[in-house]
Every structure is written in structure tokens, then in C-alpha cells.
Amino acid sequence: MKNLLASLAPLRDRRYLVVLLIGFASGFPWVLHGSVLTLWLKSEGLTRSAIGLIGGVSAVYALNWMWAPLIDRVKIPLLSRYFGQRRSWLLLCQGLLVLLLLLMGEGDPHNSLGLIGLCALGIATVSATQDIAIDSYRILLFKPEENDSKMPFASALATAGWWSGYGFIGGALALTLGGASIGLSWPMVYRVLALLMMVVMVLIALIPEVEVSRPPPPLRKMSPLQWMQQIAVEPFLEFFKRCGPQLGLAILLFLFSFRLGEAMLGKMSLVFYVELGFTTEQIAFYNKFLGGLSTVVFSLMSALINTRYGVMRGMMVGGIAMASSNLLYAVMSMMGPAPWLFVFTLLVDNFCSAFATVAVVSFISYFTSRTFTGSQFSLMISFSNFGKTTLAAGSGLVVDALDGNWTVFFVITTVAVIPALCLLVWMGKLLDRYRAAQ
Image (cartoon, rainbow, N blue to C red; front, side, top):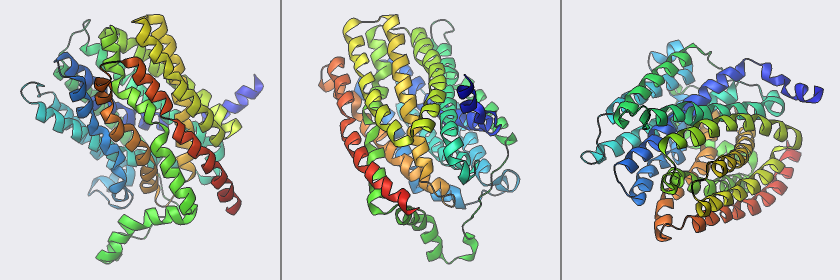
């Protein structure tokens, strides 16, 4: 018991409350262009393929590295003077999200599907931009010497905050409002969620700004060519110089492939639950509330394990467990809508997913420069998101090609992780050389 309390001692740091808040702000938009939109379009009779393709707007998360240097370097007039570099970007993004939510509430899937699609794309783009500032803020909130002792917990609480926004607070609230018990129309649900986003904006305005210990040179003193080099080249060049070309490439390839199977499952999970026979209220409670709450607990457990046994070993174990847990969904597809099996599957899946997420975020943070924080973190997380969003957007086409055979689909998501695990073994050898050179 004393050892457990000693391991949890770092959580007394008040900075973790800020990490929870910005984690919530990061996860909440995924409800807006993901879960709520999926159920809205499903209730209006759109096909699985159409829902999956519209869900492909989340592919912009894989591209945000292209404009990430702007968040590191460009100051927003007036806002940056009062709120600092990263908070000003956060507040700007959240204000835009409020406007997009209100506009989404004016849409109709039958008469203005194009408007809904554009709003969903806008929400995903603004959210992806916000994530650059959030990830940079979280890393800079802790000193480099705190990486080993506090970064796994920061990653865990960021995951917990993300799931509270996407799952048991934001997601459960949205699905409950749109379910049969309360029965709000989906456009009205979007208007209510806009109010929640306004509350988040107020809280973000109250958190402290972080400082960069080694800020890059001011852009105003550079020629246009130097400006472009600093914005578009230098952050990524520094990453490959520091890590070396082999390890740098291995990191990006691993992040690209590691969570592809999980993402394919996630894209179609709500459609699967509905087709299996679960009601919207059951999905809201089991998947969003219970699933999100359990992920918060599992994230803290994962931080303890990763701190004790190391990130690389944690990713290997987490990857195998994460893929294997997908087989439980295959069992669900054969047994039908059994609530007890739904709960058991979610608990196992959420534990494995939380374990892998904490390990990956800690790993990425370890290799991120504190000068080009947002740019480099976004580069690495974008490679991870490309597999999760762009390629996984075709998961609906895969299910349709299988004639709705969910069992085979879930087996495919299980074996999809094998290439990443092979790559992880090679990366471990390269990492030993990297550490020896530090």
C-alpha cells in the first residue's frame, strides 16, 4: 500500500488539473464530428458507406503538422498580448468551434448534407489546430528533468481528460440529450453543446501561460526566405538531426501503423452497436459514460505500469492486448445484444486502449524538442492519426464488401497490428543507440 501511495505522489501537483482541462477540450470536438454526427446520419437513413466517408473529415488530424509551425511562431493580434502564445490559439479555436456548432444546428441531412459535411470538416480542422496548441502546452508545462517521473502521469491525465470530453461527460451528455428519454432533435443537441464549449473557453482563459525555455528567433527579423525555412523546414530537420534518419523514420512508420486496427473498429463501432440491437440510451451509458469513466481509471493504472517497466515494453504489451481485445467484438457479433458481454468487452478494450495511448503519448513527448514543441509533436501524432483517420475512413466500405459480416471485420482489425509490432522490435534496437548517444 505504501508503495502504491508513493507511486501516486506526483498526482498532488496542481498542474495535472490543467492537463485534465485541456485534455477535455481536445476530446470534446470528436463527439461533434464523430459520435453525434454518426447517430444523426444513421437515424436519417444514410448508408454505412456514406457515414464512413463523411467521418473521413477527421483525416485533417493527420495533416495538422503542415500548419503546426504557425502555432509555435505566429502571434494572434490582441489575444496573444493578454493570453500568451498558446492560450490565444486555444481561445481562437474554441470560439470558431462555437460558431460551427451553431451553424451545424441549422443543417438537414436530406436537404443540406453539403453544409453538414463542410461544418464537420471545419470542426475537425479547427480541433486539429487546437490540438497543436494543447499538446505543446502540456509538454511545456513540465520541465525536461521531469519527463521520466511526471510525463507518463501527464499523458495518463491527458488521456483521461480526452475521454471525459469524448466519452463519459461530453459524449454521454450528447447521446443522452438525443436519445428517446429526453428526445431533443440532433440540431438542438448541437446548440446545447455550443454552450458547453463556451464554458470550456472561460476555464481556458483562467489557466496560466507557459514559457519556452529556448524560444526560436523572432520571425520579424528574418527575410522571407529565412521565414519560410524556419516555419516549414527547421522544426522537422531538427527532429531528424537529433534522432538520426533511421530512428526518425522508424518512429513515424510505427506511429502510422500501430493503431490502425483499433481505428477501423472505432469508426464502425456505433453503427455496429445499433445494428446489433442496442438502443441509443444503452450506447450512451455503456459506451460513453461507463466506457469513458473506466478509461480514466485505466489511464492512471497504465501510467503506473509504464513508469515502472518502461515505455517500449509497455507499447509491446499494449499493442498485443489492444489487438486481441478486438476479438471480443467478434464474439459480440455472434451472440447478439447481451449487455453483460457489452460491458465486459468495453472494459477490456478500454484498458488495452488506455495502456497503449499512455505509452504512445509518453513516447512521442520524449522525442519532442522544447523549441519546436507543437511542430514536432504534431508531426508524430499526425502520422499516428493518418492511419487512424484517413485509412480507417474506408472501414464502412470494408464492412459492406463483407456483406455486413462483422465477425470477419473484427478479425481483420486484430491482425492489422502485426506489422507495427514487428517494427517496434527494430525500433527498440535503434532506441538503444539513441540513448547511448545522449
